[in-house]
Length: 517
Image (cartoon, rainbow, N blue to C red; front, top):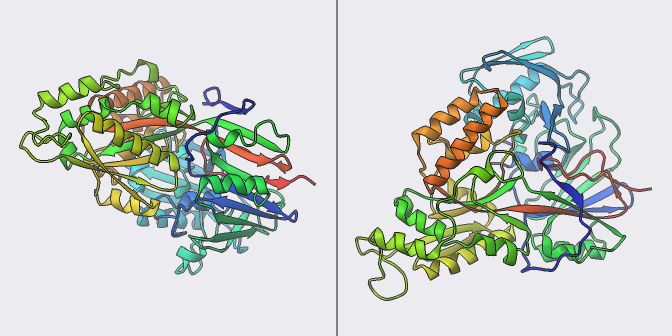
């Protein structure tokens, strides 16, 4: 991965676009030992087993796992110092780091590590998509995981923030608002999902000095407002701003601009439990979407047009994948006609072969403004081929509820495709037939079998071949709309030191971030 991830300081002025942005975060530093970070609303609870909210706990410098990823995307030790695995991939042993304390001063023992992981396994329905545990055993400083299903990447799985280690020996009845007690450089002081969240220095931090007394995470939902806050000095760092913002800072020595070719994919599930259960209608939708225009014009080149589950920044056969449902509006109309869809009442939109109106609800969330651009552009494009799209913009938390209850026809999503170091978990979570996240009803027996084989395959080339086959099947089934792969920008005042963009964007607030003296 190290040679596949492009990261650079942006030097060229980039023209503005339509006021849209990815899920940004902005960092403010004042009075030397205080940082304030502007973020979009993402979590309404600090319970780490709820949805993906453990990412907040990791990003805010509180949660840590047994392993982690460095700035090049390589897996390295964290709360475990080393690990070994059996040849069949069913037994993994991790040596727990000695001398680590939780932020309340309690010792982090192997027994408490085991208890923390067991709590996650009991409470999160996402765990089965990572691994299938038979038992966990403690022997001195070692923890051994005995698996029912072989796993070639257990160490990568445990780097996901879902498996952060928290102190379970204390009263956690108010964890939703107080947050877990963990081992990172900071600890939660207060939490307001619509206002300010404050983390303070962990006086017991095991890995060096923490330069800041506190960090405030402030909700700044509008991208333009975040950019203005950086320009006015209210904040000192802005995460995930988009192409349109870069020109406001480019060429100004008071700011640093970093960019990263994203490991994120923006895509929309197509719910096969409803009208989109018809392959012809899904094919028409895909052929009616001009993703090249969306990314190059509407997003000002801030994204690469999508076609497959895994972006070209990762070496998993992107160029060799065949997209039979690439943009072709005339072909889309022909597919509809051949399948019996026609505009019976002359309103410009087709009815299905039984004469019923076709109206597809497209659900998107408001904290990543480029998602609205994709949704609105799709609505306009699909109108041209006679497909009626109804847009439904909701909060991120509501979108999760809509996804989980399968209340959508199309539902847009933006995720990290290599959250465990490669795409295996991402593919299993979203397209394995029995996955809790697969609420779109996608099912392909070959894909299931290949994912099961992938879990126990260690050889890198063999894994790549399986991932390529899985992607091609998903594309051939017209299962999902892959809109694009966004670039990410990180803009900061030049006085900020130790600020690093990580390909696995689990790490925002770190012990290295500070204002130059």
